[in-house]
Length: 117
Image (tube, rainbow, N blue to C red; front, side):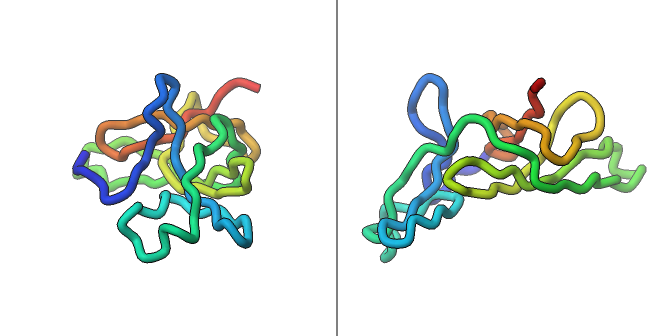
């Protein structure tokens, strides 16, 4: 994955995604605002909770010529609140409300794994 202009993960051994929280309104945004941004002083960088709930998803069916298997893309709601979009991995088709955890991914930066209740 290419180097990003903003931080994506904490440096902790159990890394968490990073988002920004507006110091005045409390609104969260993802990804985190880069330190070089003119808006950086307005936000504080915070770790996203490790587990969220699947808000919605769709299944993409790539062309047969691509050789790619179908995959799910979805929004996951984390406490904050912050809603993050990405690939959803798991056994079988996702279900709205599934618990999901973010994990590092070499190609996409992060993906969401569905986890047992």
